[in-house]
Every structure is written in structure tokens, then in C-alpha cells.
Length: 306
Image (cartoon, rainbow, N blue to C red; front, side, top):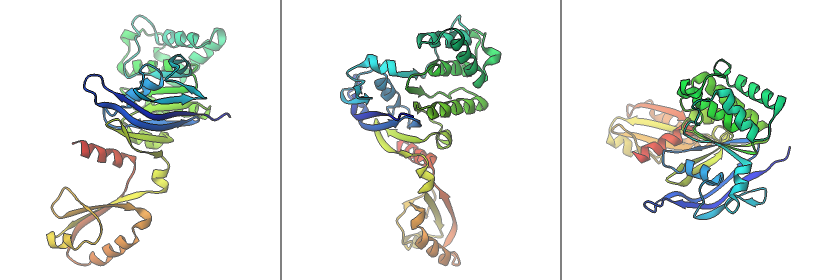
């Protein structure tokens, strides 16, 4: 299978209203056969990045390239190679789920029996058979969301962008949606998903970019979070004197005399030995050790924003 990459280099975009950065000096690589998650707070620049990739917004600085073509210089080529599911529901008034999906399939070159087969298979995989002939105004928010998803992925081009696709979707169909994306990635698509559901990212995504105020704060392969884990050690000491005698680097926790230490698991031997010795004394009231995941990094960002 041919492998290819979507490259984002030195990308910056300012808001016209106040000059603040929506994206600032972004460097990203999105690979075929992978699901990459974009995570971060509202206003972190995730949607703006998607709109620049598909050519709806032009960056102030930088480039987006794919197969030796600049999407910034050639937005028509960007839209030809990219499909996008936006945050808002697709306009479905007066048309059924099946009609909506079929219309996009036709635009992307499907016809006849192949169109019918592709549409029906997609409707079945997403669990939409019961509502396929229901018009848009009679659909729930979750069903509208799934219809928008189906419209984005039917006969999809090489790059698929999805902005919070699981919003309003019930738990069973969330799984169906992610499994469909896994199948698309296995076929060689570049799949980029904006989401706030970190647990789903850890379960289904291959890579992630954590954005904060328009910049990349953290990125990498999701699997490295478990192959090279860190732990959070919380120790509540009896008093201030006992806390001051703690020999490892720490930050203060939410309780008085609580020390929080974050370190690589492979470096924890000395701390665990120290803890074993001091547990027999009365200087430690309680302690906990927790392996960190992507959700913890996201919560750390939330704490900083607060």
C-alpha cells in the first residue's frame, strides 16, 4: 500500500478581530493509515487548522503540502483531496438520510449499483437502517450527526477531517463510528479527528497533537504513553516539617502538606525505596501512585487554564 503524508510547516493564523493567534508556528505530520487526534480546549485552534487544511481559510504564514502540492497555493486541489465533517449538522431539511448520503456519493463519482451498495453498507455499519428514509427535521441530534459523518466518509478522498464527530451520538454508535474510522485508516486514508473525548483517543487513535492557545503543547504516538509511562505519586505528610524533609522534586497538592511528584516509571526505584522506609514511621498520613495517561495531560492543561 502506498504511504503518504500531509505536512504542516510553520503555520500561523491570526484572528482579524484582535490580532491574537488562532494557530502559531504549527509543525505537524499526518500519516496515511493512521488516525490522528487533535485535542485541546475550545479556542485552542483545532477547527482553524482543519479549515486551513481543506482550503477554507488561508494561513498568514507557512504551508500545508501533500504529494508535492501546496494546499495553500492550490485550495481547489486541497478540497479535491479532502473531505470534512464540520461541527454543525449538515442541512437535511426535506431530505432523508439515504438521499443525503447518496447525493454526496454521486458528487464523488459513484453511480448505479455501486452507489446503492456503498450507501447501504455505510447505513448498515452505522446502525441507521431504521431511519434511512426519515427526513432530516424528524431526526435526533445524534442521528443528524451520524448522517453528517456518513456524508463525509462516503467515497472519501485520501484525507478525511472530522470535527467532534461523536458529539450527541449514543455510546453504541460511537463505537461503530470509531471502528469505521479504523477501517478507513487500514485502507490508507489520513484520518484527522478533533475530539474532547480523551478516553476514545487512547482507545482508537494512533497519534495525537495537544493544542494550547494555537500552539502544539504535546504530540506523539498514543501507544508511547503506555510503553514509556509516567506515574503521579501523591504523599500527604503529617506536618510541614515532614514535607520539607521529602528529598524528591514535587509540587504542592490540594491539601496542606501534600507533595505531588511526576516521574518516569523506570526512575521510581529510589522513591519507592524511600517510601518503603518511611511508611513505618508516622510522618506519612496517606499516599497514592497512579500511572498517567493522555487524559492526565489534558486535565493538567485544564488546571492551568483555570
